[in-house]
Image (cartoon, rainbow, N blue to C red; front, top):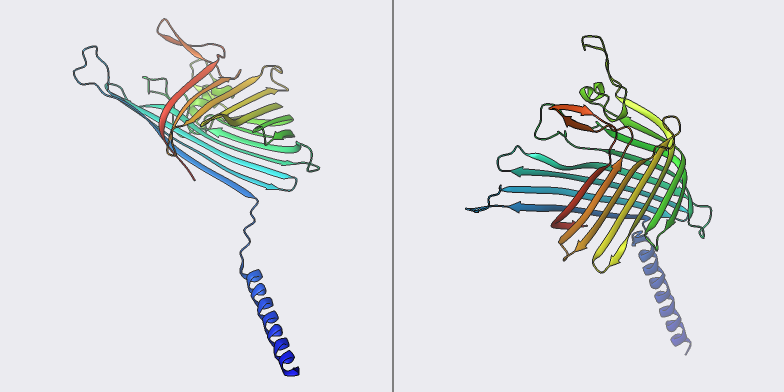
Length: 317
């Protein structure tokens, strides 16, 4: 009997050590799968093509391509929220009998870092950085003698501190900063000499010769307000509504720069999407031009509007 008990105890002891060894192996070999980063990558290509053969009412063959991408990286841990977003778009149109034309051009990077004092509140102490420019020259078609915009001409940089209200269940955030630096870059000397986008233009003599070149940058300090609503409004329909308002303390306080972007993404299937969008811009520093009696005349600022409608391929990973 004693021998049986001894054997039984020995077996239990062996099993105990084997189990402990196995648990130790599991504990030491399992990878750490906890990540505080969320990432989304979405790329797409919209195509619009029209062709005519013996079409009695006439028309020009044309094809338009628009490539776009949206990449986000979000870090969330306890009371810290850090959102980074890169948006790129570039469109090109080729039409029979005309020179190729740019239809869309955007490079935008947004980064917002926020910290809240407890886990209950939806308010964050935040710092925001925004950079916005384009990839290629823009022209007042069909005139391609001189560009009216270029890469980093303009480029807009916003950097400020303030407060942000975030409701993840609504897909909504609103940011207010009483202290935001806005820097406008015009790194194309020809455009800087013209005083484009609000920079100081070149100084000339009586014969029109340049005495001092125009400045390539302009700095402002003012109030920035932004908000975004991004959520599914109907089945397979995603709304993305963004509004930015800015006014400068020193130069014409109360004149508000407006940038409103509205997009509806409609999912057909996993790879095909249709989208409708609009972009409305008003900037008191951007002077419009008009043709009067065969001459180009600079007038005051005007409301700028861009409308978009497209169907194409989309892939998210």
